[in-house]
Length: 559
Image (cartoon, rainbow, N blue to C red; front, top):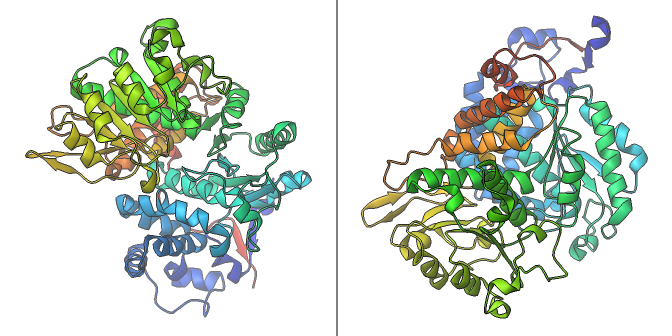
């Protein structure tokens, strides 16, 4: 391609509506004259900092978090630099607005609130001939390095929302950029619309997805395969992130592709990494060994089983034999403790199902409370989406058998959490090491302020992606994932009274880079990098994007 061919042509109106190039009132006098913008903008020329101040004041006037998110999405649609500059300066405040938990309300109302496609790609199982053209049109010549794709079946803890789940991909990519500096011009959110089983959507005249129940089986997998093959062909340096796929498909898709392409499933791997990092942080505080812990998961779906697998893999990496390691793991679901004679077990659950002969009262272990009494876990992780199920009797029973009970109620949004952090601290007399799936305030108890770590995947997946992309890694391996978890767990200050088991979201941009360097180093050490890398830290820094206005080059504005 010669220089003339690479020039992008715009009308003045198109330029000020292109979120990748638009500067709004920050276009200089010279730029306004050069690009035919005189008269299309107010006379005043503002700096980016002035725009940030102005936008933040407008945001503060919004009455609810949902209204604030609507405003931010409108800002994102017109000016990426301004949006990300504002986001970076208020990251703790904005995380629960841009992403979880407010995004759940936005997804539930996506069709009714729809104004702009937010640079997303909408692919229909009923129009598979259009997949290539749709991806090309969405990319519009951009060098796409990262796609977050969802099929909308397993959104957060709120289930099947069909094409409305696209906003989870949009929000995830926003965090990638705000936290780790992934270039927003190199990302693409995608929704695979295979239908929905939510009848209220199918009956809603405003619903924007295809109007039939979900397609499963061979037809569904052929749809996914065609998308993956097309995306890999169009974008040869792609990191493909699968998000919120349903229990029936998520693990199968990951297992199919993880050894072939650079891919990641946040629900299976990401949550596992952050829980593992939290366990490393807890071990730093308690001075115990990870391989001495007895692990129980309440909730054995995609997330629960995936987390257990990730922690189990770490037991193996630390030298424990598989048979011995499995004796440390127990899964509890709606039917109670999982046993290996249960015909409904999923492939992800089967490795951790127990034999009834291990328990004298196996038939009675049909509740979490009964399982805790029988097993005496030292670690209790909740992914059940069953609110309030970590009750005081259960927590006190657990705490009676371990000095520092590790309790992670991870279900989100807030209304689905298994317990409140303040209750866990109180019920264990301050001994519990707690991480929650949603933001939690510090807890003051008996003169000590307990910081509560948020086991939010955002603590790890941005840095994991940045490191993998910076290293030009051919795959994302278990060793790279372990390196990410160790780098996060090592940031805990074990000598501080009431220390959190995970670093705070307020330092997200700092430790995302720490994670990225650890991941990239592991990729290079394992020879997975496609391009030579002499200095990993420099490669990571060179990959990062910062929100600042740049001189417009290689564009031509037509009068």
